[in-house]
Amino acid sequence: MLVAKSKGADTVAVMSVYANTGQTFYWLKSYGVNGVKDFAGHKIGNPPGDASRVMWPAFAKAAGLSPDAVGFVNVGPTAKIAALKSHTVDIISDFYNEHDLKVIEFGQDLGYVNWKDIGLNPYGNSLIVNGAYLQKNPKVVEDFVRVTQKAFAACVADVTPCLKALLDQVSGLDKENQERQWERIKFLMTDEFTTTKGLGWIDGERMKKDYELVQTYLGMEKPFDVTTAFTTKMLDPGIKMDASKVKK
Image 1 (cartoon, helix red, strand yellow):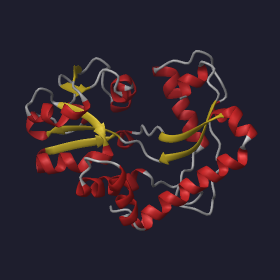
Image 2: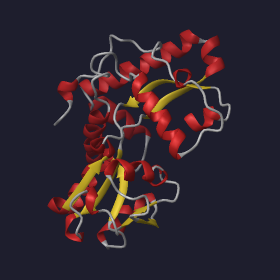
Image 3: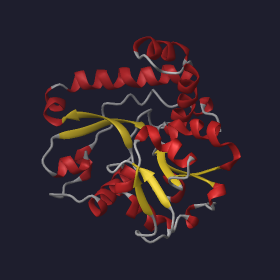
Image 4: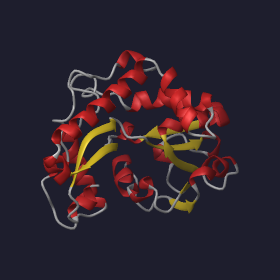
């Protein structure tokens, strides 16, 4: 969205569902990888346009690695676990909400690092609105954002009706897997801002860091004031993330 805005897109983020990045690298310890310092010389599997591949130079810098320390292998999103299991690749990238699928498959042999753990925590999974529409219809946008906040808060309090609604509308989903994913998503929704300022909060200082990351590694066609890319005015500060519902 930040790249699009630099090209003239009239967009504004009004709520960030994930307070923490879901970007995670997974590996098997039996392949000789025990942490990010061991990535050098290994192969990472993910799709060509995967965000973790595009942003790899930022990760490498934060981890103290050379950008060319690893090789990348094209692996489809649904084939990542199989590629790791068959040793086609040594490391895969995936979202943390699907963490338990890897735990079930690999057990104690599984190693992982979330990007947040090395100091990279960009926002993602946000609600975006057209800027002109927001100016003309602020009450509509505010109502939509606050209903969404209420919905997420209700699901945090009791996920049962939420999962039922999801499974009733979307075929092919496994109930137990969705339950496990929701526990991970609650972790991704929780930080010092969502628990004190409002569920879905977007912090200005973090957005500055995100802007710098994008500017450095993806490029901005035309620089802009990052404060125009988001607003927290639509959020209800009375609706906060309940950290007591998050499993450690």
